Every structure is written in C-alpha cells, then in structure tokens.
Amino acid sequence: MKRFWTEATVAPIQGGWQVLLDGRVVKTQAGSAQAVPAEALALEMAAEWSAQGDTVDPDTLPLRDLADYAIDVIAPDRAAATAQLLRYAETDTLCYRADPDEPLHARQIGVWEPLLVAAETRWDVHFERINGVIHRPQSAATLARLERVLATHDGFTLAALTTLSALAASLVIALAALEQGADASGLWTAAELEEDWQIELWGADNEAAERRARRLASFSAAQRFALLVRP
Image 1 (cartoon, rainbow, N blue to C red):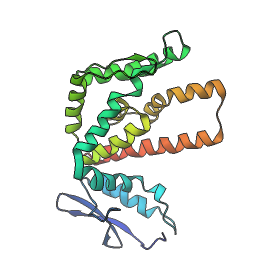
Image 2 (cartoon, rainbow, N blue to C red):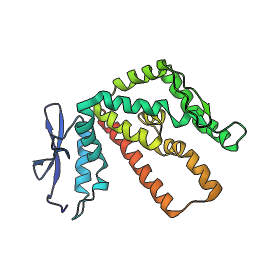
Image 3 (tube, one colour):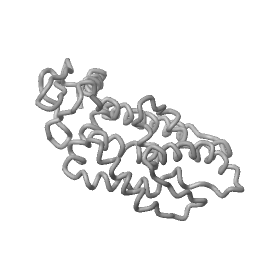
C-alpha cells in the first residue's frame, strides 16, 4: 500500500483516543473504530504511521496490530482469550527441565527458578516442576488463581500477553514483562535459554539469528504496548 497521508495525529474521543491520518480516523483491519485507552499509546501508534516511507511496511506497525487484535478478536470473546493464555500456564516452558544429571539442568535452575519463585510469591500459587517433556498438569488452584490475575487486565493488556506468551511459550514470563522496570531483553534470554544452549553446542546460522532478532523485536513491542496502555 502506498502512503496516502501527510500527517498522523491523535484526538480524544469518549473513553479513549484515536489516530487520525490527515484528519481521517484510522479503523481496525476488520473495519471497527480503532479507539485505544491511553493517549501515550495513541501517540506511539501515530509515530508508527509517521515513520512510514512511500510504501507502508505492515511489519513496522506492531502497535497498530496489537490494538486491532484487542478490538477485533479479544473484545468479542474475552473468555476464549483467557482460556488461550491459561494453556501457556499449563505447559509453561519454565516448568520443564532437563534431567538433573544433564549440564543444561543447572542453567535452567539458575535462570528459570528465580522467575518461577517470584511468580509463586507474587500470586500465592505453586507450579509443578517437571524433569523431561512428559506433560504434568498444573493444579486447578494454580490455574484458577492465574485466571483471576488475568481478569484484572483489560483487553488491550490481554492482547499484549497473548503475543508475549506465544513468543516465550510461558505465561510466567509474559506476566513478568508487565512489571514496571521489567527487562525485556533479560526475559527474552530466559525464554530462549534452550535455543541458546543448542547454539553453544552446535553453532548459529544467520537465518536463525535474524529470526531471533525479529522475535525479540515483537516481544519488546508487545511489552511496550502493555506499558503504554496504562494511564
């Protein structure tokens, strides 16, 4: 798509903010009104549009895409979005470790265990740790508590959590990314621990490095989106 506007601005509307391209309201990809809850988020979304060249690059509009997902997908069926997020808790990558006699296990304990313990303390839950890849369900009490945690977040934050959880294969990491001052790069390193271990053993290639960079950029954008949603 060719660039068809000169100026991207924002304007308040009832209950939120919207982006305008030369005074015309931006709509979601499904055609809904694209209203976001915070001015700071609207300004950053307008900046995405302003940064476009003569041809629009959809890959450089991650905040727009997350807003559209919140409006078009999550708002009509919040329960389905919550159920999807809870599946990442049921199979959270931080809970699945190598066997204790394997060198990888020590690194997993050193990096993953502090994140799990912090989550258990914060939400008063217990996560089952598993050696190997055989699935072991988390307790109903833990999942119910996490469901209540998710219920405290608006649909825009759930959109960010959906991206964060999918990229990290971990709801624990996704929720940790919402904490003020959270280090996106450090959390991403935790999520990529096993892949980094394989790279140390067998080496990396340019394609894998480029894929990792794109995924980190998406993770960082989702974290930024969640923080911008807040008043």
